[in-house]
Length: 550
Image (cartoon, rainbow, N blue to C red; front, side):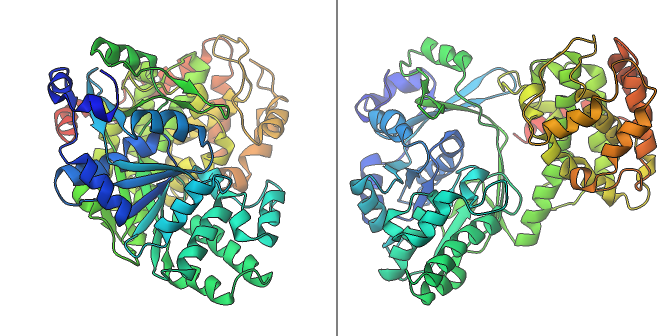
C-alpha cells in the first residue's frame, strides 16, 4: 500500500491491515478550506503532523468542522516538496504505545502545504490570499524557540533582522519578518482581527511571539515603511495566547518503519534534508499529549476543545507549564540524564529499569516536588507524575538518550530545580534528592563515568566556563571541593538561587564528595540514599488507574 489519495479508495485493504482511515469527504473538505480557510499552521515538522493535524482530523471525523488545516513551512521548505506533495498532503501518524503496540492512522486533515518563503511567488500569493480572508481565525506555530528570536547571543538584533527592518516587507528574509508582512497584508485588505497561537514548548511563548511581531511593526513604522496604525493593529487586533504543549515526537524510527513494512505499507523511507531534518511519510509519537491554550481569540476559533485541547485563562496556562517544567516531568528527565551519563546508559527507557534511579526520580517528584507544586487544577499533578513514571519514561519506543536530554543543562537547571528550592521558603535545607541530582550534575561535568573512563560532554553554552571550574577537582580526590564548588553553587544566574543561602551548598558538596570517591562511587551513593526507602510512593497502587487515563 502506498500513501496517496488513489490508494485510499481501496479502504478494505487498509482497514484489514489495521490502519485507521479518515471518515470525511476529503475532496469536499479541501474545497471548502480553499474557499474559506479557518486555520493555518506554520512549521510542518513531526509535532505538527502528530498533534495539531490529528486534532483537526478528529474534529472532521466528528463533523464538528467542515474545514481542514493549511500548513506552511518557513525554515526547511524541502519538506514541502518531498514529504507533503508526493503523498497528496497525506501523512501516517503512528502512536507508540508503552506496551509495544502501535496505532496507525492516515491523516488527511492537511488541505494544502505551502512554502513560507517569499522567493516562491506562487505560494506567497496564496499565503496573502489566505491572510486576507475574513474567515481566517487563527495562525498557529511550531517553529522551535529559535524561530522567534530577533537577537543574537550578544543581545543585539541580527544582521538579517536589521536588514528586514529597513527593507520592504515583501522582501523579508526572516520568518518573523515574513509573518509580520502577511499580517500587514491582512491589515491592508480584510482588516479583520486574528489570533497568532504559538504551540512551541517554551516559557510564555505567546509573549515571545507578540514581542517579535510588534517589534517588526514598530521598526517599520519608525522607518516610514508602514503607517503607525499597523503597529496599533498588531497590539490591539492580534492576540497572542499563551499555551502549554507536551508530546514526544521523535524522528522516524527504523523499528517503526519495519513494523509498517510488515503491514505492506511501502512509504517508510527516511529523508535527510540539506538542513539535516529527518522526516518520513510517517511520523511516530507517544500517546500521552497535552495542549492547553489561553482562551483569547479575536476572530473566533475552531472547536479545538472538542478534539482534546483545554481552553483556560493565562494564569492557569502558566501554572500548567510550571507544573510540568519545575516539578512533574522536566526535573525527572534531567536527573535521569545526569545519572544515565554517569552510569553508562544510552537510553532513558533502559535507565527506567534501574530501581535505584527510579527511586531517585520518585523522591524528586513525589516527596520534594508535589508538596510545593504549582497546581493548575485542570491537570492533576500527581497523575501527571504517575503517567510519566509508569508510561512515558519507560516506553521502549521513545529513543531519548541521557546524552541528548542533558544538552544545555546550565540553561535549564535553575527552572527545573531552582523553582522548587525557592518554593520551599526557608525549609529547603531538608531536601535530599534535588541536591543529590545537582551534585550529580557537578560530577557529570568532570567528564568521567562511574568507572573512571572519559566520556564526551553534551553541548552547553556555558560548557567551557563550567568545565574550567570543575577541572580544578581531580577524579577521586576531594581535598578542594568546597573551594571549587562554592564558585559554582553560589551563582543565582545558573541555579535561580544561591544554594548556600538556601542551606544546600554544603549538602551538595557532601554528596559530590561521595560521588567522586573513585570507581563505583556513583552507584554506591545512589544505592545509599535511594534503595529501600519508605518515602517512595507505592506506584503499584496507581498503575491500573494511570493506564486507564490513556
